[in-house]
Image (cartoon, rainbow, N blue to C red; front, side):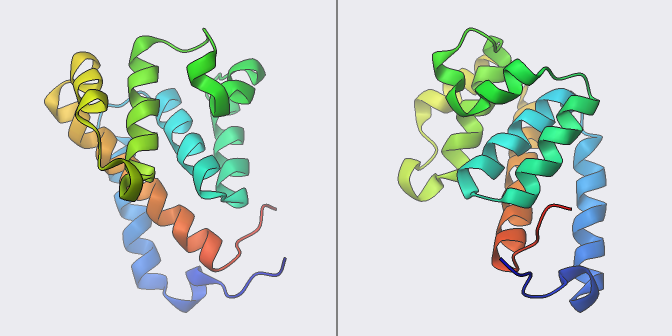
Length: 145
């Protein structure tokens, strides 16, 4: 597959704004390893090869194990994730597939059990942002290096 265009060169101001938002979201108090799991799961759902490669690599750098990384796609069927991580992964799936799920009350209730109000907003921002990056990368065929 060939890259369609370089979005960084084509629309640098917009991409700089997204990068600035990414920097801000990464500092909002959600633990870095959990942010990477969320980014990885959304990227898997969206079929973003660039982002799956990037965020699995970033997760490893933050101490994530191969076993858990390999299990992210089947997190519901494994004992490897904490209740907080499970709530975040469920919320990630619900929001990434929002046209089908409509952000179910059950997923939100589980989220509320494990995250403060501020953390719920911040996690939702992180999920929304990775979905933006996924859509840009898939649309313009950004490839892993």
